[in-house]
Amino acid sequence: MPALEWRWALFGLILLLIFAAVMAGWFNMVAQACVRFLSVPKTEALKQNHVKDSLVLFKEFFPGIGQYFGPVALAYSIHAGLLLAFGWVVRDLWAKNQALVIQMATLPLEQRESFIKNMTLSQQTSLAEFSFVILAGVGLYACFYLLTMLWPTYIIFYNKNGWQACLSSAAQFFRDPLRLISLTSIIGLIWVPLFLLGGLAGASNLLVGVVFQFLNLLAQVFFTVILFVYAYQFIGKPLPPVEADDPSEASAEKPPLP
Image 1 (cartoon, one colour):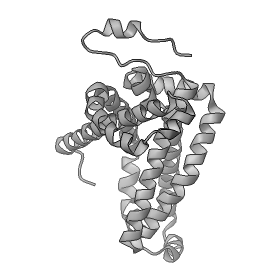
Image 2: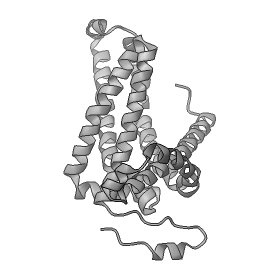
Image 3: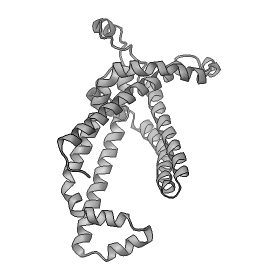
């Protein structure tokens, strides 16, 4: 990886802001689709032309950027900040084990065991320490992601900022852990095999890898829809967006959250 200097930091910040803008518009489209489907009786919703409606939803993309870009960027910055902090913690271990990890990654699977056995005791100890820290960091971040996975719904549906959305998501998880863990497990059973198979297949066949990555993308879209449906049904109906011209009037119309 390149040395950490201001140019790379600026480049990463620009990518983060572009990604946040795109996701703000897309989250708004997903939220509007869920509201349109769930706010009418099921029999009527099934009769609607959802293919045509999905094309109409593109008009919600740019208003979503204008309305929710700031909160979405803040929420992603929180996640990115945690990952950067973890990278800062493991930087010395990575520098110490970088050559071994890269060399081992280039070997076929059947040769890696013999490669590890031929290492010196100090190299094995250092690599084991590095692996433990990486696994611990991944586990901690997975727990944080699980606690805060509802943050897009709190931003779009309930007009929270990025920090408030993460806190509200964690509070909702502790109120309803079994249902949220079940939903996440179902999505994990779909997404993890697609992710692993996509990586393995993509290494040998580009076309097959592209197909698996597309299926992986569909699984992530499905997961996002599930989160918005969950929020609509178990947290509360969406609040009206806060208008910049008269925020006091919009806030007066907000129904209380359960």
